[in-house]
Length: 263
Image (cartoon, rainbow, N blue to C red; front, side, top):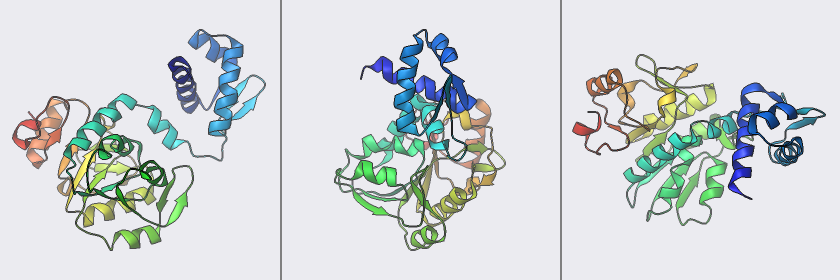
């Protein structure tokens, strides 16, 4: 498949995730391609993403959760930058937790280059990706969410409460100076809260689009975050905030030294 087809189908999914339904005509005009080309793309996407085709276009089924797909398509370059920077923090022999979010998934290409690393995870998607990597992987059981391909709930919490001595790498749906990092659903927030509580240290991964926003459920307050990794230099206000909180911030072209990473 050529790169142009990949890009075109990503654009279609991005529009569909934003608008919930789109027409063949609108997509063809937006991408300057024929209606027939769009229909071929929609047929493939319908099979891959369980979309509902109709005579004039395509729509998202009301009974499916597409939040993971939406997050993975948005700010994808920012997530890749964060994944690289976070991967550079992981040393050989490390014990880490990686959450099931799209930002943490970008750490995996760099994780595979490490030696004797142990990963604790609740993501089936991550487990599949690491299956032949040589990484020591411990999977958390629990209630399976098929659209997110992760495990949550009481069983997952009990399993996580029996583990200590790891560095937690977690994503977030929003960060706010007063509210801290937050999640859009309660199950993810509860799980992340316990992961952070039991971790030896916690690294928060957040692209700039999530700054100055809050989702419904607080994960933890800032006193429980040890480091932040983001895709570009924070605003002066945020730099001063992180300095006041004594939280090092890692971003492109910054050093890994806490005294310089936020200046």
